[in-house]
Length: 110
Length: 118
Image (cartoon, rainbow over all chains, first blue to last red):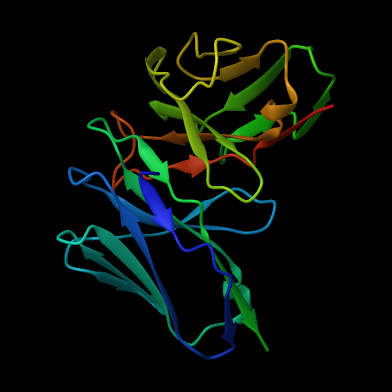
């Protein structure tokens, strides 16, 4: 079983709609959580960190549920430019090694 | 430099050849990581350096893989006797945090080296 698991999608989302997806992690000792965005044939880029109390960055909202060991990402008012693969990232070791999920593909359609 | 720089951008190797991939991290970044990303998968951890010390190499798939960072800045990932299953994108990332990455010091990735073994 992989340490970080995501629904691969694709999530096909009409422009302007809301989409949400989760990621589960297996290491209960994990302390840091992130969402990265990866465009086709590009490197991953940090989208946002995920804090215990949940946090928002514009149209993006991230939540952490430690009891059930999952994090979520919600995108409101989807734009065509939101089409990408969203990687869930968890520190899986005491020294901060980051483990990546396989990614959730989001396709926003006109 | 402004970001993490990797070279070459693309590398085609015949099976059995040795290859060397270079990473130039952001200046002053203590932590340096190598990841391997196969098509349709997320990046898989290979190895981690804190300055010149290789603190974790648990992700290296075999003894054909070797990484170094002799002066605590530029790093090289070497793959000996390449096999077809080594075909992937090799990503380098750096962070200003000691001990990996954190909320205040996230990972910054280079644009990767796409290795194709024929």
